[in-house]
Image 1 (cartoon, helix red, strand yellow):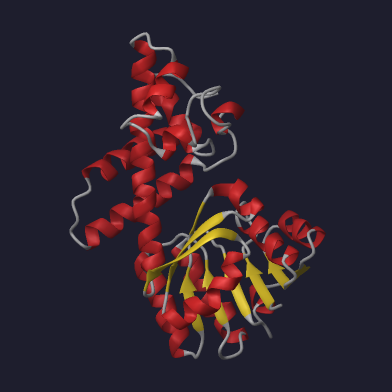
Image 2 (tube, rainbow, N blue to C red; image 1 turned 120 degrees about the vertical axis):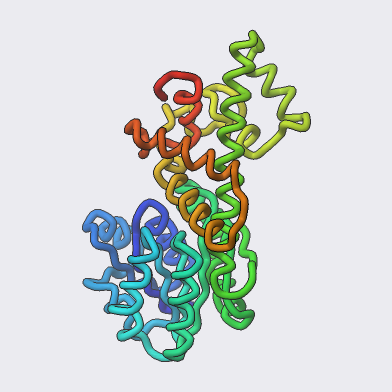
Length: 296
């Protein structure tokens, strides 16, 4: 078993750190929030006073931070100075591709090994150890990272070189954001046309309109498997986080001159949803805005 530092114990990182501890690793965890540290200690982790302490005399460091600026700062100011050469870094944050590549280059120049490994699956998957990891980095770095990531997820996929994990994540979530809006619009239209929502679900889930947003995460309460719609759109994947990912996708598209009209439309709609005060609601709650109602 490895000695693993974990920096960032929020909604996603907290459950991920606990799963590493359950797997038998010695986990030294750090977060700015005392409640997160208490949860980590209760789950078998040792807690550190700083990110630097969590990276000292460690085999691997996992980070789960809010944005690229935080990743760049924490690595440059705390983790790089404290870590021993050869330490493996696994950044599971969702950030911009350019920052991921810059930090990876800096890590390599200092004798470290690094992968970007953003996740898909949400809070329940983080707690349950069923995340999907999209990993960017050299093949040898992926080989070292895969066993650790596998203890937090159900799928670990090598997407390519540094930054490829982030690229895969934002492209995937651009599909998801656009797909959820189309699903919500179609369900609202079906109801207004007089269709029974369950019967329409039974048809569309077995026809060409089938999608993950419909069959695994249906935005209507009482239809399909249990989803945040059945909990008043609480929990799950916050609309504010979906907006963050769509903004990352739009910035990346602009950088490579890619046409993304559907992605841009999804960004605008989620921006309006968040601006209405619903940023903490699950992203499927946008069905209420699209149908002229408030969620819940």
